[in-house]
Image (tube, rainbow, N blue to C red):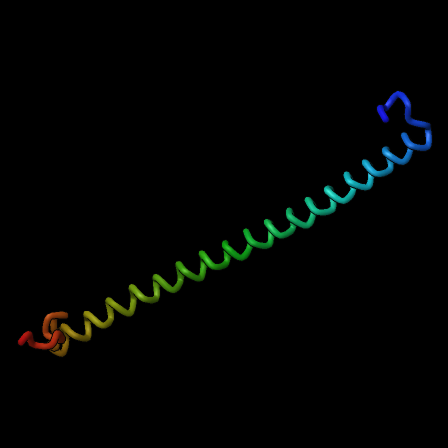
Length: 85
């Protein structure tokens, strides 16, 4: 049945189906936008946490180097390796 042979009720039904489909797609898009916003916020927080953790690790490494230099206990990683037989 082509569009010229449809009754007004069929046209109305088709229009309502299209409107329902558009509404469904708009709703899904809205949820996806909200999800993207939430994920962006989480990434921002994780990035800040990572930066703080990296800075803390760098500070600990400097303090360990200072401690090793002050105690004369400066060993290389080769000192910890087992002997080769």
